[in-house]
Length: 138
Image 1 (tube, rainbow, N blue to C red):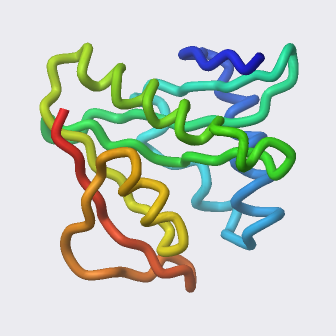
Image 2 (tube, rainbow, N blue to C red; image 1 turned 180 degrees about the horizontal axis):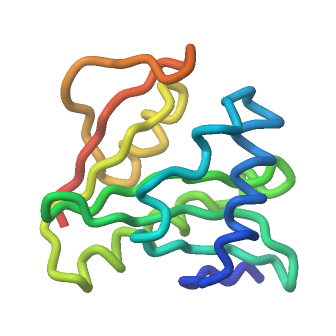
């Protein structure tokens, strides 16, 4: 059973992000941990005692910004990502926020649409990967 909960164990979250974004997807390691991280809520998904996914929720200008969403390859296609986003959205709602945004990799737009997010603005490039901003009312 997968358990998703807020965590103070940011090092484990950073390690998951490094595994997925840097090693697997080729993003630069220098920008993976950024100035927003200390002020974000970090979520950690664990399968038994094994960390398998993470995301963060930051409050920026009164809006929940969900980011750094990643699931290890071994656990993709099992609903972990959707559960992670639903927990992030629930947390944002519990703070009284009315809107959540995220920057989705282009191939994941359909995934986020199924979770109630809608694309807005023009697609943009992040280290050679096309992305799309998306939003959802809470």
